[in-house]
Each structure stands twice: as C-alpha cells, then as structure tokens.
Length: 338
Image (tube, rainbow, N blue to C red; front, side):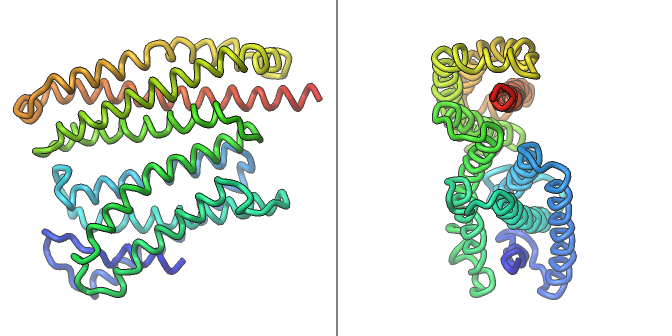
C-alpha cells in the first residue's frame, strides 16, 4: 500500500509552489479515499464472483488511468489546460488509480486462490504483477529526489506506456474470465478492440483540448485506430466468424439456454461490424486533409470530428460488450451440453 503515497509528491513544473505541509494533509485525505475505493472493490468482488466483477473493476481502473494521463498531459502542456488546479486533480487521480491497481491485484489473487491456482501461472497474472511493480517503481524517486525534473521525463514515458499494457491485461483477463480458455483469434480480436478504444479516446482528447501539435498527434492516432479496427477487429474477427464461430460456437449457443445471444446480439454485432472500419477510415482521411490553422481555428469542425470519434468509440465498446455476452453464452451452452 506504501506506493500510493508516492503520487502525492509530484509537482506541476509550471504551476504555483505548494507547501509541503498542505500537500501532506491533502495527500492523507486522498489516501483515505483511495482506501475506501479498495472497499468498493471488495464489495464488487463479493457481489460478482464471475467475469462481470472483473469487467467492472477493469472499467473503473481504465477510467481512472485515463483521467490521470489526461491531467498529466495538461501539466506537461500536451493538452490545453482546463480550469482548476490541474496538479491536485492529477495527484488525486494518481492515488485513486494506484488504489485500484493494488485492489485489482488483490482481487485477482483472491480469485486464483479460490480455484486453487497460482497467480503467476497465467499471462494475465504476470502482467498484473508487472503493472503493480511498474506503478510502484515509477514513483519511488518522488520520495528520494527533491529535484523532480531529473526523472519527470521517465515518469511521463512510463505513465503513457502503462495505458496500452493495462488495456491488454484487462482484455486478457476478461477473455479468460468469459471463455474459461485461451482462444488465440478471439483474444487477438478482443485486445485489438481494447487498444482501438484507447486510441480513439486519445483522438477525442486531442480535439477536445487542442494545442499546437494536436493535429499531428490526432493524425497518428487515427492511422493506428484504422489499422487496429481493420486488421484486429475486422479481419481477425471475420476470419474467426467464418472458420470457427459458424460451425462450432453458433450451434452450441442455439442449443443452449441463451439462443438470443446469437439471434439478437450477434445479428446486431454483424451489422455494426460492417460499418465500423468505414467510420475509422473516414475519420483518418478527414484528419489527414486538414491543415493546422483550420484545426486550431474551426471549433465546429473539431466538434464534428470529435462526434465521429465518439461514435466509433461507442461502437467499439458496444461490440466489446456484445462479444463478451456471446462468448459467455457459448461457454454456458458447452457446460449445458456436457
């Protein structure tokens, strides 16, 4: 639990100086709130001892991580600052995110012990331990060095790197929790969707809080989103549908207790599946055609593009949820037929 304190000692390079005493008192109150979040995790774990509990914890962790990265980018100047004390918001979100990293690891350890399994026997468990260690080691210098400028660059790089790693770990854990086994194509399909959602959030933030270099970063993010959606979600997902789902999973779902998972959920997913790459490419092409002045000065154009990115993000997340429901229905059907 000690590493949670470290978030309290980082400073805004360009902001006003904050006294150590007031900083300490504020950090203590934030830590108490972080402990309360751990209790929330315990309640979720007791209420949902299946993949639903894991999904809820993963979603909360990702939201807290996203907010911590956003406020950190504002401190650095990569995103336009919003009103308020950004340093305090960044510190609070860091403490809360640290609490959930620790709580999620404890929850995963508890679940593995319930089944008599070793935590490190799975890739998901190893990634979880790695994330916990990285979050801990990232902030140890905050207690050692008074001149935080020496490691601020490393702190920023590790913070950004944690985002895709946490998405991969969450997707991997949810995949194992829903299917009970590792299916390579389905796993790649799920992880690609999670990373695509992360990149779309990046695009939305660049357009919501634009700076001088936001357009260049938004273009890069749009290329990544188009690739992930096309290669990972569309091609891999379509190949799995044609080779495995139609002949192996669909009959099991239709014969099981939840045939609506195919008749309704999968039918809806198939239609969204067709349009998602088109939206991703349209967003990427439009961003590529803009110049920096138009992007900076035309708020209506940015708003329209942001709505398109939000639509794509909603579709990706909705497909992710539908995929979890379908996979769970297939697993339930298999258990029923045994």
